[in-house]
Amino acid sequence: MNTPILAQCTCGNFQFTSTSEPTLQLTCHCEQCRQASKVPFTNLAFFKMADTEVKGKTVVHNFTADSGAKTVRETCATCGEILLDRTDGFPGMIGIVAERIQAPYEFQVQCHVWIGSKSAGITIPEGTETFAGNA
Image (cartoon, rainbow, N blue to C red; front, side, top):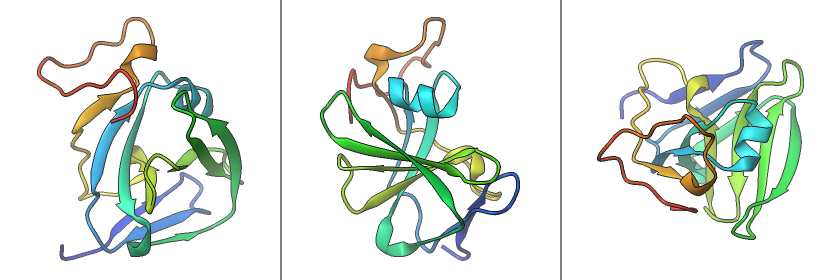
């Protein structure tokens, strides 16, 4: 990778930097993601925590996933945009909402998770790997 991956919220008070490529890119349809993001699903890119830096104040929203894993979603303390996902299900990794990542990064979904609880009317492209629960 030539340049770091950068992300920020709309107001710019939150910034995320990774010196490595994402290890996992997924679309999550769980109830907690829908509750935190206010949209039918969330595109997340997960990075090794050791390769990332996070700056800015966030508001922490604690959840217990259907799997029983403790999960944290973080939103910008200023503009309220959903930003981060930290879950016991992916130890040592941190997820960032893909739409917050700046170009030239392009989200490339590897799988859809928690499709057992997806919103009605959402169609998953044929041939995409899916999981009823977590990957």
